[in-house]
Amino acid sequence: MLTLAPNLAGAQQFQNVRLDQPSTEGFKACEPSIAIDPTNPDRIVAGAVLDQVFLSLDGGATWTADQLKSRHGVYGDPCIVAGPQGDFYYLHLSDPKGEGWQDEGLLDRIVCQHSKNGGERWSRGASIGRNGSKDQDKEWAAISPSGDRIAACWTEFDHYGSEALHDSTRILCSTSDRKAKKWSDPVRVSAQLGNCLDSDSTTEGAVPVWINEHTLAVSWAFDRSIWFNISTDRGATWGAEDRAIADIIGGWDHEIPGIGRANGMPVTAIDNSPRYPGRIYVNWADQRNGADDTDIWLIWSDDQGLNWSTPKRVNNDPAGKHQFFTWMAVDPVTGHVHVVFYDRRQYDDTRTEVVVATSTNGGAFFANRVVSESPFHPDGTTFFGDYNNISAYGGRVRPIWTRNHNGDQGVWTVLLEDF
Image 1 (tube, rainbow, N blue to C red):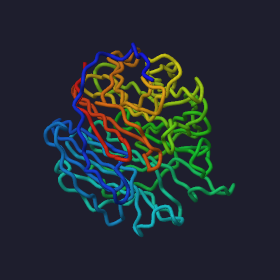
Image 2 (tube, rainbow, N blue to C red; image 1 turned 30 degrees about the vertical axis):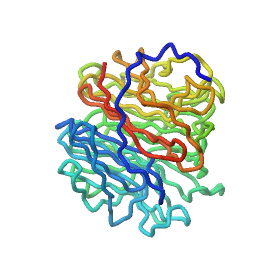
Image 3 (spheres, helix red, strand yellow; image 1 turned 90 degrees about the horizontal axis):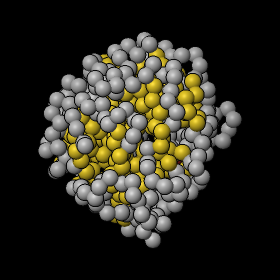
Image 4 (tube, rainbow, N blue to C red; image 1 turned 135 degrees about the horizontal axis):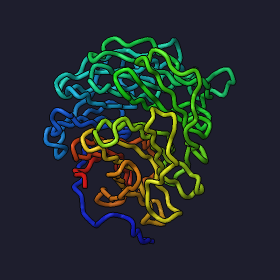
């Protein structure tokens, strides 16, 4: 049954574009990542599970597809970031034996592949964080303001899925220069250890940001809270204690009808524009309003994480519906905050739309726009992934998401301009 949604902005129809080709073999595309080239915003690079890489030279209207290859193997969790000098970096998991999660130690490192020519060719891949049989998982990366440094943070599992009390998880971080060939030895960021069950009591969801050339920060989820730590020496050392900055009420491991699994882990971003320079944003989803009412939240800090605002609800619908799988980007030119998420406010079943919420005043108010051309019905039978993504530059906004309708799963974007 259709319900009213008076807080959705306008009734504009946006042009959706599919990046991948339908496939009935292997892993279906999901967990998409996207980045706009700040030196040429018409050039955009995207990636998706397991090893797909896409390139657009016309702002996202058309795409060419290729398969990413690495000497260390490519096994999902794609993270694509772009530097201010036009460099692209594609980080992913490793699987040199091609056996996935079937035995311990097979996802044995994080891999970073660098492109100096706008995503047309990629390096062979640098190894990050290999540590015996331990699993390295769910990485994300950030580029320093100058483009001269890159940082990657992730979760290390002693043994993924283990119930043993002696097996634990921790957040690690490593850094490299612009070439991204040699990475520092991983440094432990999280003082607290989580379990290996890939749920609320696992330390997971690390997303770093560079506050300046020397100061690096990261937030992550653990034990129904968002934790934060900061390094003032380019990631060499971190604060001795984790700081809890917000509650993930109900935990980050969510049950969403029609979705195999879902999470509300935090996303960290920073304003590098003249609007609110240095403001750190953290965005997540939780179920503080009930298991049938997942919402999207945002906090910010103007003093490098010492103090934080009260949580702001990003979705502006009446209570009672699910919004989930959030990601955020802050436009480095305008300072506008853009948050993408799945939204079911208009339906009483599992029909799902994609909404982009935009704040032009530092997170105080968000306008919500449906950007998907039509709703989809996820079937819950295939791996849907753990995240979506969004990139913004100079008023150009490019969210990217997974769509699964009647078994046809693929990744999509929309040609969206700012207000």
